[in-house]
Length: 143
Image 1 (cartoon, one colour):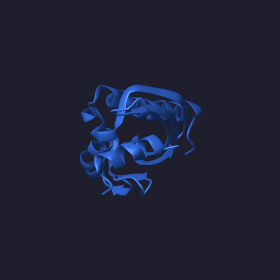
Image 2 (cartoon, one colour):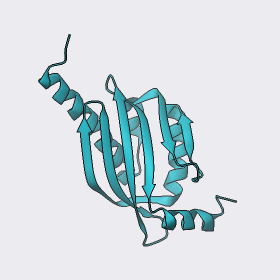
Image 3 (cartoon, rainbow, N blue to C red):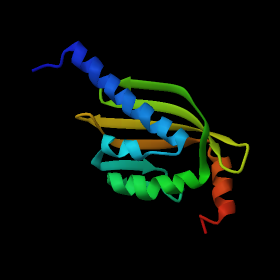
Image 4 (cartoon, rainbow, N blue to C red):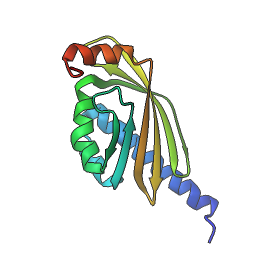
């Protein structure tokens, strides 16, 4: 049975709400409400040059290992969207965040995939990450 336009629109709206809840939780510093919106086998793919880079396998690894490492360096206080596009089971957020302890900002492109209402994957690309890499190097996290 083919999906109706209303069903497709409702699915896209739900997925948009999940993405927005994730970022608003990041701004508040509280992602506790997002756990049940991620599939148990959720995968995060980030560049290998970052301490949290590579593929994290599983919702718990993402929330309990990756996110705390990210939170050491990224400041979501000055968070803003350049854009958020959602079509069906795919969302792309182009966001701006700060680098803790600096005046620096970084642009990040995050590509989300969904299945049956749960986020299954996020693929993350960092644009011009020099200020982030400098902060990581100064912390000794790359040593």
